[in-house]
Length: 85
Image (cartoon, rainbow, N blue to C red; front, side, top):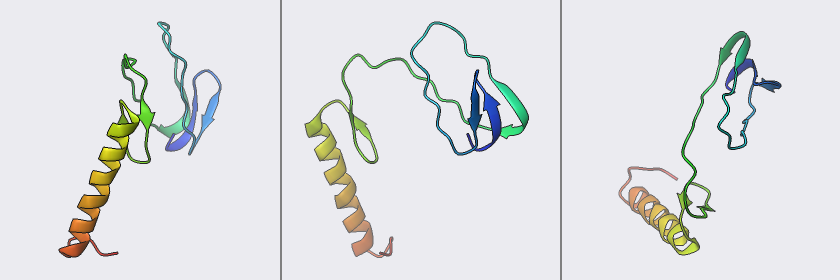
């Protein structure tokens, strides 16, 4: 929720993240006044996922590799002056 209050079915106040259980049922959203929100949806991934600070991977090794690459790119961008510390 970005601004306002949304009911789905209980109130979700501004600044909150709502996560819904997997279901085949619809979810009814009712805005209470001016409301701004983002809705995301995805099919369930067939494998267990490993969550990182910046990304989601299919294994702990892939997560380590991905986060190492983020650090490498950050160092490179700071070294060439694109990013400042």
